[in-house]
Length: 224
Image (cartoon, rainbow, N blue to C red; front, side):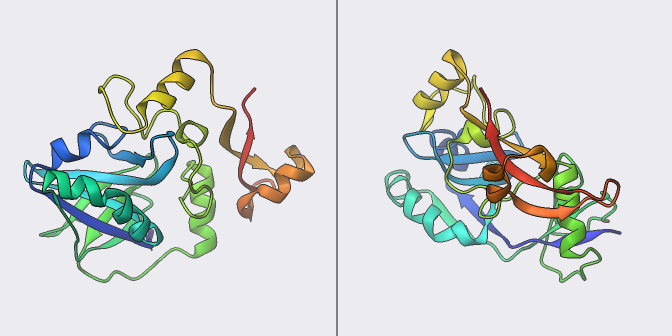
């Protein structure tokens, strides 16, 4: 089994969580991925999500963005009386979807592999280099590594957003770009020899592809 521990945090959202999240996130609650945006359509935090019940939704974020996110959510929490608190889970990436689910554990499907939410410690069987290569091969960028607070559509145009769900925070600039033009930049996986000097300097998650011997990584490229 190929498994890797992530630096992610699980937040439990209670007290009518679906209504609370629907107005301030860009995607619907039934999807595996979502995002909190500011009024300009820029990313506060991208996250994985799981609706456990009508009264509980799990939001899984990169740990380093917890303080920023809670500051962003503070007034919405006070207005809605929602309850958002840290849960006692460790988050792993199961690269081959072979993990056997136990009691009080949860799985969230990914484009390649799946997330495992558990309270049990599991030994890593994948190195940092192996996981980085996997992320590049399956286009799994990480907030805080490959992007931070970019305009959402520059990072992803589909997985983190619904164009039919109705109003949400940041919808207006997102809708204008989506309906009238296209994002200026897009986050892509490229080999270094395909990039300009400027793009090479901006490249993240760089690693040598064992099949080609070339260095590859994530980079924002022009979408004109």
